[in-house]
Image (cartoon, rainbow, N blue to C red; front, side):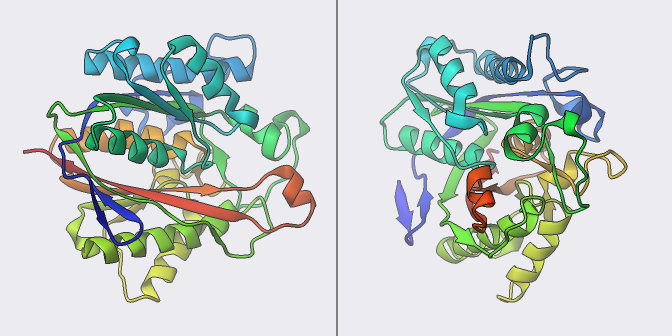
Length: 334
């Protein structure tokens, strides 16, 4: 691994996506990317007794698909990196006891997926592991009642709110050549824009996304045009506009830019300003965007996953919302 600047890793040993899997809920299936997901459910229970068990089922589904595509078994994985949004990342912890793989529990809110991919790729690049597994999940009903109000409460929300994606994404990373290569990762710093409104996470996360993106371009000495597409995790329609302005103030224009939270739903769906949640960048990247890469429509892609590091307790104490963003670059192997 070659370190570029203070925050960017360049993987100079071959690191490839061996397999990827996604699982989603009903609203995600109804969205414009519905056909790109591997497993889907028409209700929030996913065949389980409660929403927490449903989220665990989604993670299991995504992992099983990723392992099947990689033609590997769980016991062949050297390490498991996983995270979610629930207290003590219980979805990941409880699922980790089932797969019986040496485990790193991660939390970077909705940025967890690219934190996991970066660490998993680093382990493979440095020879610490031959095969690694990464997974994240979120569930609309479990996250909403933990961070805001239970859906049964029917509380009114502003248009700047986002809608937590019900889903999970998983990838197996190793050295065997495949169509998708992991080339670089930029590890972000925590940033705080002074936003105290938990119903406006797009505004809270945009500064972290801008900082990580600018750092990545500077340390890799690349122009945004190097990538066929740059995507953020879940800034939504509110935050993505702020991001454009923040990077434009630094002399950077994003011509080929999209946000996973905007992409995953139709605008007429009841999702306010767009999607959010740990699963949002995971299912869009591992589902739709990887499909685009495999079919040759995308050759170089930068995914800047974003996370709002809030908790209900700190919001009640009038604290502002810090945020984080981690970026990973992928290239299509010709």
